[in-house]
Length: 317
Image (cartoon, rainbow, N blue to C red; front, side, top):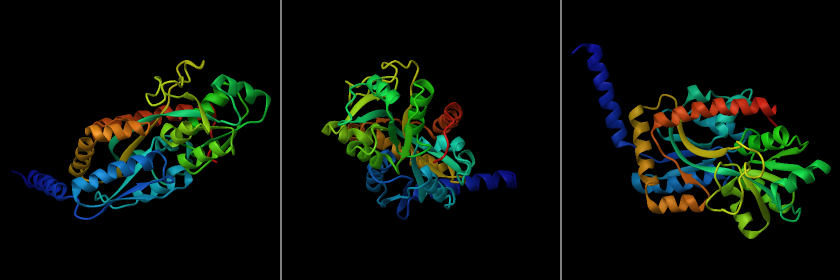
């Protein structure tokens, strides 16, 4: 055996040994949005289960700001040892084009670990404002000034709404960015904005309480948790389909064996009927898959959202 081959064998052996011993201390999940948003809900659910599996606490740290870029920067600069990971939404794929200086390179500074879950975005209206359908809301917006809220510039709910309202419906609406899904859901319920676009889990409590009216979901199929709400396509805009996904990313340079270990442990958690039920109750659908599959998906998402950013002319707020 050559020295190079021996070195490679030893390197793989050390990496596997390290992955097997991992974690030896608490693990930090950085969520780049406010508490109670989609990524926070999923991070806490999965983190609690991993705490049981690993025997080490998984700490969820919310570092909101700059449409998710602040928290992403923190993880991009962290040691690639598996003890600091990013749990974020598909906004990170949008920001690859939307943000002039995100402070990191998604495709170079991160290793995709696993796609945990996805959820449709939903267009809602303040109940006191009153439109019963998406068509009603759009017609009202043609004759009066309307503001819509989103979880922030660069999130998929923001781009979904921009494409729907400005490109397809050709409306002149005002975008009001908030710092996450929970704040924008509360703003719509309070009447701070007439409309809002957010991931379904963020607004589900207000839909159930009747404080907001769900006008349409952005997925190709109706959401099982609110089956009476039509899709945007059913509301008259064929081919419209956007989702919010939540995934785990590790800093570039994280050993492949460690990435595989985290992927495997999260996959087992997602296979639990109880966990799947809790994910569904929150308005998500479990995803899963290999790190390689998630990496390919992230690359496709970057390309797809780049087209939408260009079509809408969306800018950072």
